[in-house]
Image 1 (cartoon, rainbow, N blue to C red):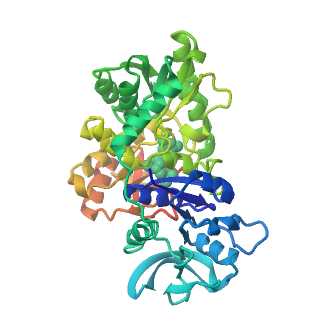
Image 2 (image 1 turned 135 degrees about the vertical axis):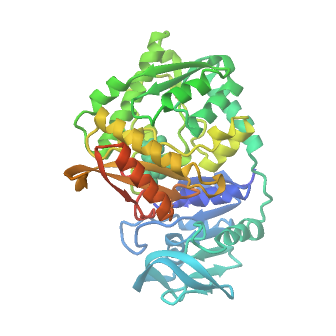
Length: 504
Ligand code: XMP
């Protein structure tokens, strides 16, 4: 199989680059930027992409790369910091720009005008020998460059994000015209490979799958039932942080399927551990740890925990946003519960995470191929810590019940929007703010509830959805009429970046 290696210098978009490459049916992997040219050579890549990163190439502690990678004869595409690193390493000049460019700007690229996403303070002032300028913006005269003989290409802007017009064409051009790759990465082959890997790892042992009812763990269930049908036990832990009636729905879907399914009602156990905890990272860690402990207890009640592997629906974006040390560099934004939250002394024989290298859209496509029902495959994501990170501040059962009702009203209204136009994710957040109101003739002092609805196809970036005022007002009226303790409803109009999707 052809392969693109994405070298990471701490860029938030590194997996997005890898995903774009895969969407063009070319396999890609992300590796740390500090890898040596010799190591890279053994991976036999057809092309190398250098990511962006938060540093300045000319500072002593900044991430560098082995200069040898530019002499391997393998085509290299540098993006943002990757471009600066290429230029700096090969003898060009990078320095602070007169102005920074953050956001979408006009760029003249290979003779055409297009909007591109820029995110840089430094810029290239002089190119190394053999390079020529390919693009420029008002504040960045060298915004793209190439050295055709050495097969080196670079762009200061981000072709991997959808904000950049025709960005995908730049990646396509690199893969197919420069690296001369013939597309050969297809999901059908991935299913077979993953099943083989699972069988190889697990042998004849038993696997306990933490099944949340979301897309990821459901796809793992389908994979396990294909790979090792009689060795799998699916455990759904109802932590009391689920949405309205969700636990019962999950039970009804999976108890009818051809797999061993067990539901554990653990609300009291989780809520007592969370009493008084307000810090979002602590909530995530506690919930992650408790999940693992419940799984251990279930395994123990059926024999020996050490005899079981624990399977999880961890996917690539979970790994990135937790700042997985394997890829180094990127700032930890949030520890996703199923990655950052696992206790170190886990008693299971090992972890089975077949989707760890896949993106959400690949996981959905896999789910469809494995025959899962569309309502499950297209389900909007719901974070593992559930409503625990949507009740801001300390969590109580009363607050969760209030949020469950409000969230159900909001989701019901959005579910009326045709599927193709529906937001990718939409939910309510119970804030810890209170506001004064007037109900009847009396003063009220109720909680402030926030609504959030976003468009995104990668969950790394998102745009808020401009819902109609009519819809929002209808939801607000229903919520304040039907739920006494909520005094005010606000709508979140922040994109990611700068915000994240969840509030905590
Ligand atoms: P953020 O808030 O990081 O969310 O912009 C991106 C996507 O990830 C989901 N999310 C989580 N999923 N465990 C999960 O399984 C978590 O701890 C977690 N935190 C956020 C979020 O709902 C969105 O889809």
